[in-house]
Image (cartoon, rainbow, N blue to C red; front, side, top):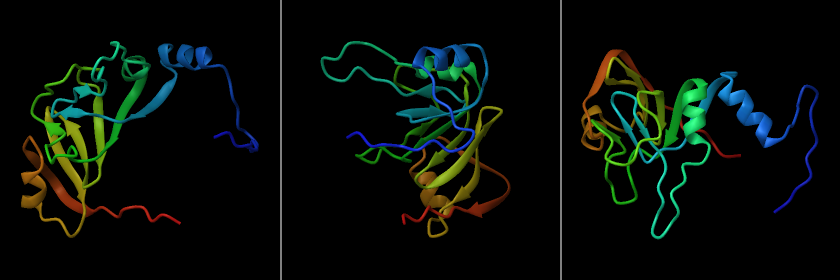
Length: 153
């Protein structure tokens, strides 16, 4: 539904065409997107036509090419338990080698030199259990921090 908002000092709004001009002009520091799949080399698959749909990638393709960094926020697995972090994407790609960090429901993973580097994980989840639901090898570079999920107020 529609809700009224109040702009805070420094806030702005503009036409969506202007927003894509900023993206295409390389003026975006970070794009945060969802994903169906992320490959260990940073490839991203985040669009699908679905059953009977018309092919359309939306603005995600512009975002992955126009932003300086691309982060993904996603569940670690699909609804049926299949990994979303893979050696290679099997779905149509939105961007090649564009993702630098993944914030999943179980872990925070950086992508560097074609590898998933585990930075944080839920403390109750063992490394081996996390590896079992990840479709590519997780590497550790230094320590592994505890991922603290946000608390809903």
